[in-house]
Length: 202
Image: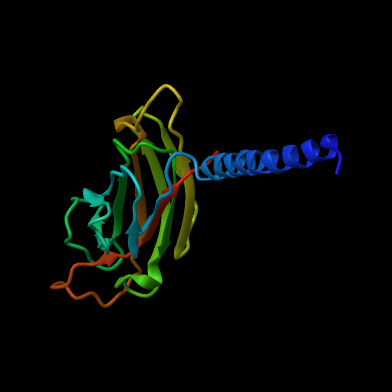
């Protein structure tokens, strides 16, 4: 073997590990970009957290110590804001989502299905309203059905390290009970929405 050939073979052998290292570096960069800063999934069925994650739904904190989120929400009478409800009454319930101090953008979904409640058959969702802490109000009317499905996301701007109070969202859902309806006055009427929250990657 000539000296030149011997040198060429040794050069290739020494370059191979270098290229493997470069390839590994790019794979790691790609994975970290795909999952952004953190990877989270949380729902009323369970929570997985890898870093700081602080979200409250109706004052109940969703974190890695909360395996089950109780999402039963009392129905209130529009007339007096009480749980004293009779057939034919118009009622409402609120869902307040506050991701303050969460360090990533989030996506959330709220699924309302009145078949998952203890409301009388024939109860319908009339409309709902979405409020933000910036004073914005959006109205969604003429629903007249048993289900509502909402999917939104809250972005964390590059100037901030975590979401704040302005990121909070409040939804108020209005229902109409049928008349006549058999209602047990000793039992509170509740709605059981499904609420899921996860990291939003834009």
